[in-house]
Image (cartoon, rainbow, N blue to C red):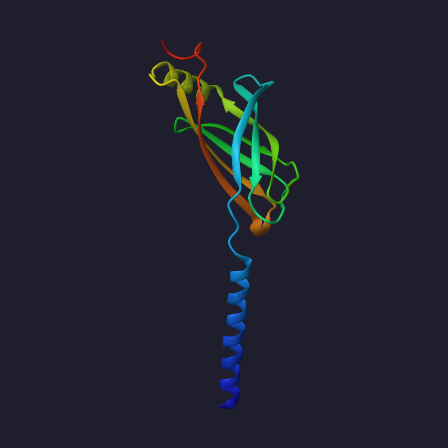
Length: 158
């Protein structure tokens, strides 16, 4: 009987320590990733290649190390480009870096967006960026970013 009570007390004490330890760890702030530039790359036959430059901001008190990134870019609600990079980087605590990720865009996606832009009255294009930083604690860190791109007047519908 005593042994059972002692085991229950020890179990409750260990559970309390674990909960206190988890509370001390705290929930980290989500990483912020924004598109800061797009450059053309040489493409293959029916695809367009671009380098998407991303600013990765770490609002946490510990450095963020990753060893790969994958992204999916949606434009006006439709899939547009995908890309991966096996670059190994570290974002300092309360710091930021810019990373370039090569992406592929199918000719069909380009045509679909051109037609959509030609029939639209709005010269602003909405985008959503989904991605994952690999090799972080817990196996990977997902992120999402949304924004708008102003279409140059020369390309805007009249």
